[in-house]
Amino acid sequence: MKLSTSVLLSLLAVSPLAQAMLPIHIKSYRFIKPSSDENDPSENEVFYVKGLDYQPGGSSGFDADGDSDVLSDAQQCARDTYVFQQLGVNTVRIYSLNPDLNHDECMTILNDAGIYVILDVNSGNYGENLDRSDPWGTYNSQYIGRVFRFIDAFKNYPNVLGFFSGNEVINDEKNYASIDPPYVRAVQRDMKQYIAKHSNRTIPVGYSAANSVDLRLATYRYLQCNSMDGTHVNQAFEESRSDFFGLNTYEWCSGSSDWQSSGYDVLNSTFSDAVIPHLLRVRLQQEPPKNF
Image (tube, rainbow, N blue to C red):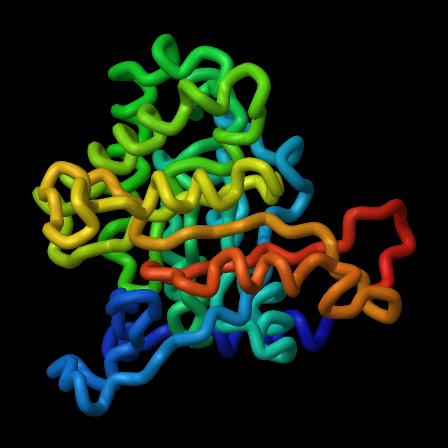
């Protein structure tokens, strides 16, 4: 408890002059971290995400009508950010947040620790996500309005690396995979246009896909496409394409998996010609205890 208190005090002792992190941007298939405000291309460096999912309590721990969420409790944020630093984490992904709460303290704690965030604009609550079985009914003004409020709540934090427009929406090949993709692109278009008009910087928008062997490559190709002929960029396609692509893979088990048995050899060759940045969410899909 003594350690937690000391860490909390040190992390919360934020000076108004504390240096903000420089926003990440994308060039081709890489995330780029500027070396300075001047953003001299010759001095910039490739940014490799070393992160983890951060959602204490899981999806059931989020209450859309509650007075707190993962990034509204400064003491919890300070405690966990200290651990992130010890692990060498430079990015955290958060699945569910309430855009109507104040997140200044937690986002400042993460900023001062040198940690970026990738945020899902959706939650599992009614009216706060695109329902794969009813995309035409759930892509509506209520839903998009909530997405815009979410962007407004986080657009000014420099350590927001990007937003996820959806998570595993396209994952049911037999029933819905043929109807959902255009709606995902529509959401991405709306988000990117809103950011362009209401934010003082470009914030990347991506999609997090299910690791379906039958769908993952088709999903990636569809969402990254920005040209009709493969040569000339179509502006409408550019506005709705994914800026980066996440893939949820649950196949590698430490101590028992290798490059071939895990399927990573196939995964690597499948995305060898990537034209936008890729992120892999890795975990072991088995009952506890899990061997990491």
